[in-house]
Length: 254
Image 1 (cartoon, rainbow, N blue to C red):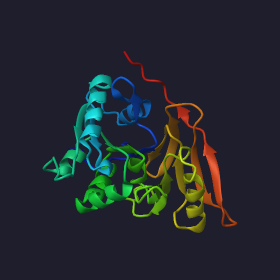
Image 2: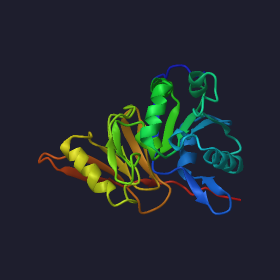
Image 3: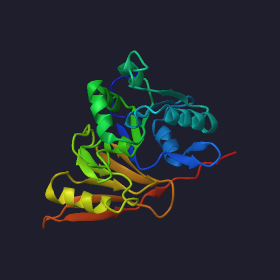
Image 4: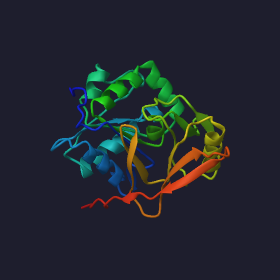
């Protein structure tokens, strides 16, 4: 089990709108952003990665796609998963998560994810794992969950705010900023009126790498996309600033 983080062991989160990529032949592949998450852990020859699909109700097909993708693309990874439906598949959740190098959380309903995690005390466990040097990452709901809140379709097609995130990062967050027309104006309005604190948004294929609560850089698995800083301006309107991400190298496939 990891010990509490020392000053030279970064406390890291990779909050993204990407991760696995679609693969026409196999269903999914491990994309550049997921490879990057593993590299951030500096885990050595056998990185330990745990997948969580709580936001999809622990959909077994999603786990199967993840295992198949890692078996093909990253056979060096010691992959595991944590399910909470109908009961935890791991007896000691805390010990298992603290033993990981990377925890990767998939997308789906962030509202349901947060409710289920609260029942099982995962918020406190994730804070402990984060402070111990485990890289926390994820896509969509798995990005928003580490923040104070953001915009979500968890309650239906019309987007609504969620404000009970874990708050490891004291910002708001909105993924898929470029893929749904209503996300941008809603996020800006919520920040401008103070419902959400200032924060970050990511276009599809973009990730935000934080050391502690400081943004180190934005990264992307494709060209032409951005991260965005959104904050309340002095006149009470939202101010949006584009951040150009570093394009990650493509992952070779056999």
